Image (tube, rainbow, N blue to C red):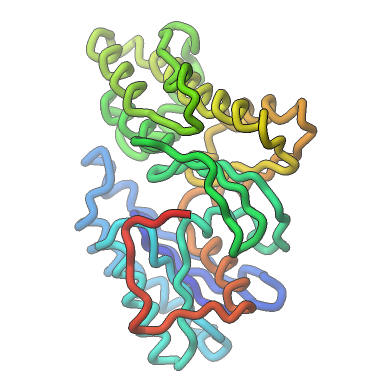
Length: 325
């Protein structure tokens, strides 16, 4: 079995995955959303302190599995430096105490493998990653063959939802709050401009849209928020669809997937489904409980890394707040 740890942002999670069957034997996640909601976003130092309190408590529940562990895996990049270090420090301690190998996992690859928890992989696949920190399109042929073909130039898709929710005083995390508010709104009420619509660049940008929404909020009443939310959600998704259409002109999708915390957005899912119909490309989705950060996806990557002998050394495993795929 492999024990995996996730602490890249504001979710403390540990999982136990059986290597041979890929079965998830244990998974527990403690969210910090309540603690951060009063600030309208994640406070890194508070997140680190909460990880230091909660991770050891979850680890206690894993003791019955210790004798069967063959490795310990941990998210080492990307993420918040002060929170990554909590998980990495714990993983190194476990590696030393139990004399088992250490595996450092890239969080973004973890999101890709959230599609395959307790399953075999299905490659190649075109992946759209939409989360609080990243928006990018990747061509994934294998664990070691991942090519990024488009990414955000500034704010991410998920980050823009959080910031719009904060402007409206809704709280954190913003994705579910904006989605709920948008259900009763008019998506055409506010004619926000689709970002980079005239640009030949295969890239994403949400800073301009975020600013347009801010101006609309400042001129509106609270009763208008549902229409602003609906119009924003529509344009934020339309931006992704427009750039994907552009990419598909040169590279038709055979299999397509959406991963990351913001992949739980139901409107985006429906728009992607419509986009894929002409291509007869199946759409892969993670279970909703595995869309956001979790240790099960880290464990699933770690199983493959274990089988390929892709281990880290105690001295060589360092955290990195930023990384590219």
